[in-house]
Length: 134
Image 1 (cartoon, rainbow, N blue to C red):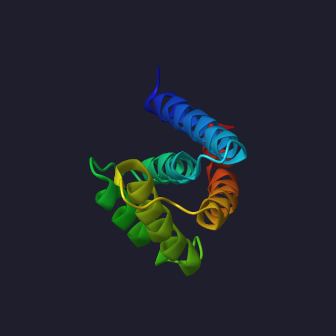
Image 2: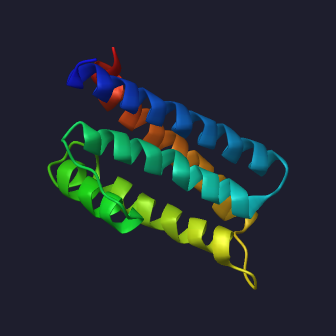
């Protein structure tokens, strides 16, 4: 297998994981499980940020590194809008609240916004990734 084919397969696997996470976010939202809906919405975006970074030969072991690297490689140069950076930060905050919060929870409105935001970001990153998996 060539390096190019290995990259294509890895990106496709990340796309598949993102698609599953977004589907799970919608299911959790439908069942009024707002914490997990927001968590899965974040992961749908996170997996595609990692895939996009692979196209630049970049990998990171921590969430903060992925977010920072994505900002440096894609938001600052204008490939994706600045609003995506702010949205990812909000998604991460809600994911952390949903995953680790015991006294507070993600609200219904926040979860709905998170899933809609994730859908928008996922769609945009998928368009960017299309040439790498074709």
